[in-house]
Image (tube, rainbow, N blue to C red):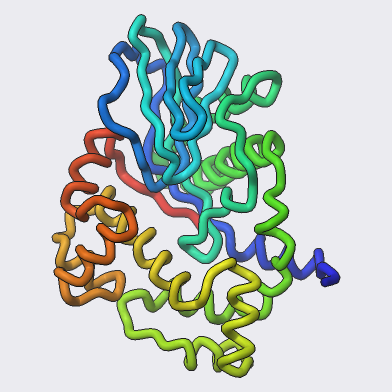
Length: 293
């Protein structure tokens, strides 16, 4: 299939958004290895300045991160962290999405441990981004502050992706995303509503059978499976960042029956919504979320 690079570039430009979930700079840390796996719904970037940071990564084993190096944990990676001898670090919790909820980093093979010049630049950018996100804009600096936040977030994305390999399996059929873009956008904006494949196919000007084939080629899963995954990803974020009840969150992502929602969530993540909310908040410092399109 011939790639329409300009069309794909335009699609990416209008579809990428980012959310900052918090971070810190010059944070003094000392703690033993966590007893349970972390499994957070965003990317975590840790940059030690003093001391050795330890992380046990599911399927990889123990990794040691020294000053000048960077740990990058993509969304939903299972890992633990420890700094038993103590130290100082910068870190950021951030997520880059396509169409609101599709993880942009899923198109890359992201290194867990990064060394060299890019690692140093990432650490500096993480620090600057935290400063920009915690500085409250005044009336006279609102536009400048917004532009700086955006610039730093995109610089961080540039540095991480420049250090990553393309996931060719995820990119081979990217052209098809152009054809199903109306359906992807509709799902993002109408998660709380009943959505059927027939309507999605109509939005994409395809027959139902052809839509199913094109969608599966583009995303790797069937349309309704993608919708379920989208709803579960949104539920993760809402459980982490909001104080809405479990029932309300279920309704917001298309499951008005709280029992059905809890069953779907547990079958997807092997944990109940309430337990996920408790554990994820214990694992990360909760800060105000700012979304940028």
